[in-house]
Image 1: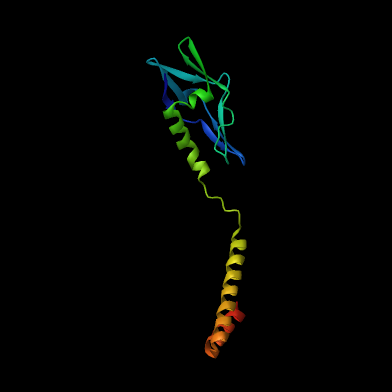
Image 2: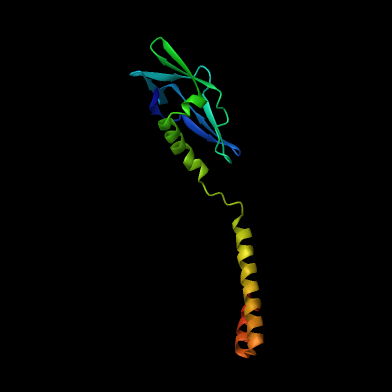
Length: 147
C-alpha cells in the first residue's frame, strides 16, 4: 500500500471555475514497500479541482513515480484513496475555496443600507402618526429629510 512521503504543490493557480495544483519533482513523493518513489512529471503534472463542487476533474490521469530504475504508474483516482493524500490535498485547497467573495461593490452595499435606513425612518414616522405623537413625527421627518 502506498503512503504519502511528501506532498507540496509547486504552485497553485486559481481560475474562475477551477483550482489547479501544479506538481514538480522535488515536492511530491510516495512510500511503497519501504522505498521512497519521487514524482516524475512524465504524464500528468497537475490536479484540477472544480471550485463549486470541489470534485477532482482529472481523476483518470496517470502520475509516474520513480525509485532508481523502478517506475510506478498511479491514477489520481488511486491517489485519492490514500487518506494522507486526501488530507493534504484538502489543506492545500481550503484557503482557495473558503475565501469570502463579495459580489457587491462598496457603493452598492452603501445604497442598500441607506435605502433600509430610509424605510425604517418612514416606518417610525408612520408609528408616530398612529400614536399622534407630533414631537416624534417632527424628529423622524427631519432626520428623513436630511438623508
